Length: 116
Image 1 (cartoon, helix red, strand yellow):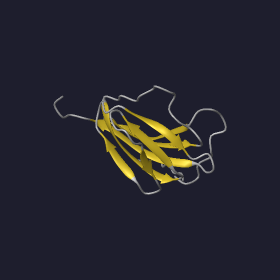
Image 2 (cartoon, one colour):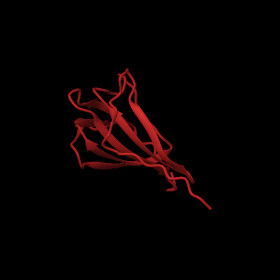
Image 3 (cartoon, helix red, strand yellow):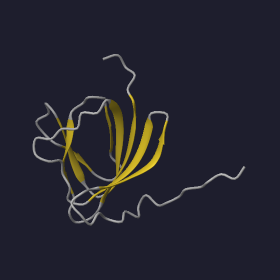
């Protein structure tokens, strides 16, 4: 049986041309999603918080960014190689991303089976 092979380069961002981030779903199976996200000067809208029912592990591969977490006074700065595990329903937002170079993220979303 011949298998389909999909390939690409995580560092070939194809920087977003419009107002939206570029989001590429690389894998989606069994409740797990892996996305590559390219940001260029993007931030979450004012007063907007992500509140996902799934946990998220995110790594910044290139660029620079900062995340904000509800209830924390200071943003969480990120540089290439930094990663963070965000539990399900942990309200967070993107404070800012570099507008000088693409910020390339790798995000893994998975079910959080921990009792609530």
